[in-house]
Image (cartoon, rainbow, N blue to C red):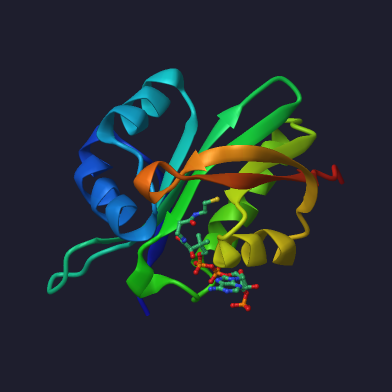
Length: 158
Ligand SMILES: CC(C)(COP(=O)(O)OP(=O)(O)OC[C@H]1O[C@@H](n2cnc3c(N)ncnc32)[C@H](O)[C@@H]1OP(=O)(O)O)[C@@H](O)C(=O)NCCC(=O)NCCS
């Protein structure tokens, strides 16, 4: 059984992160955007399958969250397409939600493209509610724009 680790994202991870970013997203983040997030102290984590003597470490996915005052925003989450639909995004988000709850954040907010069925499915499955929408929020091909759904989850303290 392979060992999985959620680890803070570091600059040395960025080549692998950018490769997944290119494969996973319609409008991928640039290296500068990841660097800005790391420099700003955003919560950025990678999910890795640890290597063995015969096989190197593999990056499965990552997420970036921006802490606010009472709320925290999910800025980016991606799972390498070859590892999708195996529960990894759900696992990362559950850990992030626990961490946010422990740090007394009350809500998580996110934006998602209206066409992004997998991500909307993930968030609905994890009990995020649509609380708004943003007209022409995301760039698309050939100068077109796409609306975003704004979704939110209240974090429950035990
Ligand atoms: C969205 C994304 C992060 C989901 O990652 P994942 O690891 O495949 O998701 P999980 O396996 O944890 O799925 C958890 C639940 O989400 C929902 N879901 C995930 N992929 C789905 C799909 N393609 N269609 C419908 N629902 C989906 C399901 O309810 C799933 O539970 P189930 O497999 O038991 O039915 C992944 O598709 C991705 O990286 N997409 C590209 C980047 C992106 O769009 N990020 C979000 C930006 S807002």
